[in-house]
Image (cartoon, rainbow, N blue to C red):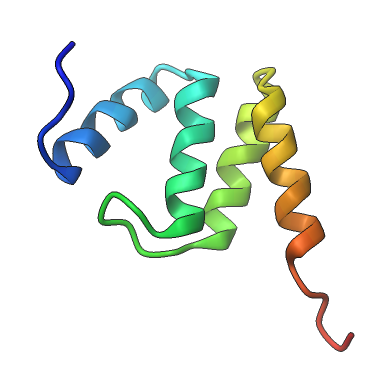
Length: 78
């Protein structure tokens, strides 16, 4: 498959794989939401949901990303 030429096409390719429950794609999409890339608005909650789903599907990389997100997110009132 050729590389997409723009963010919209790249996002469509990733979402197609996410729809098929591909843990690598789900982890990748979580990262895009976390950093606000591919034309997506930053959304930490969505990133965590996606990473948790990828973890359940067996992604060790998503487990790392999820742990990192929790470690680096300040706790309210701290």
